[in-house]
Length: 522
Image (cartoon, rainbow, N blue to C red):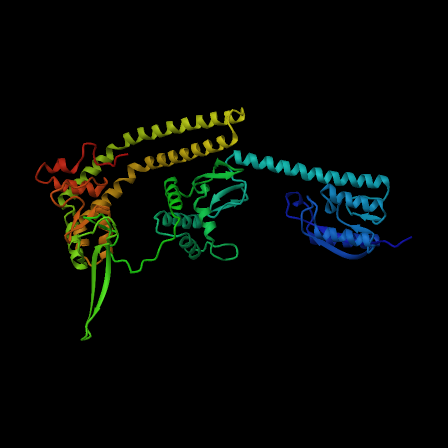
């Protein structure tokens, strides 16, 4: 009788069905002891860390080839499911038994004898293993679908969140969430590139698993991931999650606008931009006023530096007549315009008093507005139910259902953000108002300081893009040649300028307060 030679085969994968299986080390230890007790000759030990759900395991395939060549005629394994969990691999084992290439199989946990009855039992074990895998896969998918219906994202949590293994939920990782929120705020300003956000995250300790900065493509995905506002994508569909949002819907929408607009790379300017660039337009042709810094070197060794501002003169249909103005003259005129908007002390005191009164009376109106938003939320919930009914009744196509559902969920998130904002509005508007009053009182100090960029920031807030240069004179748009000022964007500064124009024409009490009161309009 031919002496039997065995190959010891151990396998374990990271699949769900292998969670209760012995580790590789434990299998090897048990199989060695089993072979010694049975007096089996082991010619080799093979270890494989791969799923057996589908054919194609390289080490398993190599083992079968060696058996076909006659190097061994037996296999020692912990259980038949270590050899096969699919019909192809199981069929190969049975075929080798049929043709005599494989004489024996040994399992510590399973009886096998190379007889028709034994092969039938082995085949049933393989079939049972496959059925277990198929059922487990279906049960797993069913469980994932149920998690989605319950508002739980059934996958790895994105940056800023962690998977809580105790509660099987996704929770906020507070440190990274704060950093991520700052990244969204930076990008929303419109002056940051995807690379800048990547570098910011890297400096803050958020990198890839290999320790490298996150790629631009991945940054774009992060900035457009609805997970951060409480929604998530699964199976090509938007779902409402139960996890805590870390990004406000308004901020998220602002970032999406920037992502959409950003396409062309920014061109590097030939000259270093001067402080007041991008603030003033030419009154004659409407082009922007640019600044240039010049250095003049005299023969006697003296060096003079000049900054002057002039029209870019980019219009091709006319020759702009405006001439340049020196930088110090631009600074002087801008300072005078800023001084004119300084809030008088008595006005500030009266505005603070009126704001306190308005604050006390605003709670009731805010409550009404919150109820209105909640009613809109209720209507959206009804529309979502009707939409789902239409889809289940096959009256609505799948793509239409997904598209309309995404729109309604986005609107629902916007309403939730508005309700949250209104709920805090009673406290939110008063403090910024007081800060504005405080800033408006200090404009005269900013006007006389040497920080030109600080002046530009203040001037941009006060005048927006309504400053023009005409005959070397800086004015609000439309204020030259006897024209009435152009319609400007309505904000606190425009209201203050309008109020100052009314001084002497009407009582101060009527100037300071509009009919609707001090609290910002909705």
